[in-house]
Image (cartoon, rainbow, N blue to C red):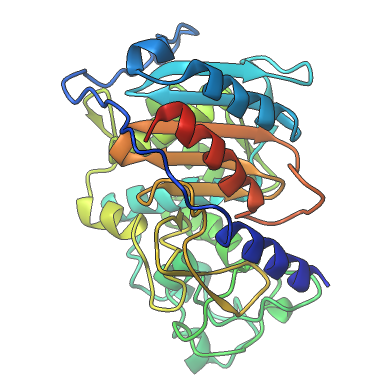
Length: 359
């Protein structure tokens, strides 16, 4: 039943209106990107009027989001806050879990670990977890690499009773690694163990040292494998990604080949998936819990180059390089579904936001 619901919702938003306004958003390519201080609540703002945005349409987009169980919403352009709003008694210090949007954070950290030569994504996963981490015959288990975990192509069965179960008995064979794309939480979650084992410290410690402390995400943390942060902290991560792994001149991830692979199609099966990042503007996509390939892009009315960290119940970090824009939406499910990643909110929200931004 859930698979049918997912399919119907995806068909709804890919068949949505594709009309775009003809006026282009004025992007100031000279303006230096702004990074807020690491240990300071101050964040520079810029009026949408000064950007040539339609403030009435921007307010409409925010009102729409607020009517859909959004509790924290922020829009950055060139790093400055264009509009920020909170609902449901939230404020800029409220932390919330970001569900599977945290997958994209783990992908970035995997790149750092490879940069530090702690691991190699082309190595088999058993190099870091030990043999017998699945129920597969050894020759099949040895086909699975860290890269397969990043690209959701381990070939392990996502149709088990508990897709979060990491016990070997729950990790069963369906296809050889690399031959099947399936959105499966357990192999992803074990990436945190790969990083912990490779680094010799806990995953939480590694993330704090290599990422959170570097870009001012001082209150962020992981609990039961799920990341918690404020809306602004999620926006900091979005700015880091927009700047290709560099924060205010400090290079956090200098492996440009890894970064490029991370935010581009990672395999031939689901064109809209990188290394634990969702990609807009591709010719087709697949959805969690389904093996159907849909024609069209994830959010037809969103920017084609938009990359997305997406989590259950509409946790969203949108990064748009062509517009120098980062948008974060935190809260609860925007509709009556509990989708794991992409949802109709993506297209509905960007249908409104594009008119405000005049792109």
